Length: 358
Ligand SMILES: [Zn+2]
Image (cartoon, rainbow, N blue to C red; front, side):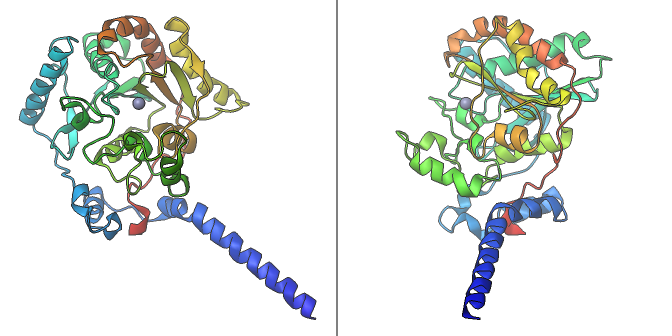
């Protein structure tokens, strides 16, 4: 009898442990998926008022969500032009493009993006998330200019290209550009991925040789930064068939998404081969199977939402390499854009709120 009682107790304990494990690992995400979405306006107002942020740093996290007028964007483009002059990249990178900006950074800079073509197969291209990786920025703007000048690439071809070439303008418009944004957050560690709470801070605090490295601080909570929300909103809005994000200086191409580890179905194989569409036309640029981090775009979009996501890491950050890289990678980028892949991502739409709001 006593033995039975103990056995029951053990089963009970196991059940409790199992349930707590479930609640830690699954519930936030489940909530995210099932909770009735609120309008982004309501979400924004809630977002700026949650006490989770801690009373001492709360004010840092308020952000404006006003769209930018043509005049604002013009002023932004002029500012950008002077940066391009400083690095001797190219003239007038910005003002000829029809940009949209629905959000602003803490410093008031518009978060710009533009679209080319209106087809079903969409490619989303990001650069400038880490502005100290300088050379990626002119490539993003040059690509937008190039597509504007060559509409035959996407017209009547069932293609759409969305480019957001400067995800972290605040980090660029400094005497010495930084990786992090104004709040000191690494935007490529701030996405609300399933492993954020269990791993993001821990890996930041304990990473061998780089403990508490300020350059890779993931934020006080996931999706805390307007620049992260900007990317999530773009992904939710366009549900891209594929994403490309440009960085430096690791010198490789990496793929996150369906079939990353083992590609068994034809769809997975096709998705995984995406990374070679760039490599083949860009001097067989090195392809690796790199890890993804808690809160990174590759993890959020590629791993969790199954949107084939390629990271292009140029092999230096050197701003003087811009012309070289443009020449080397343009054929690869074109091949990537026209790579015929249907939308394979699922569960793409997600709430961008902090889970503690629910
Ligand atoms: Zn980077």
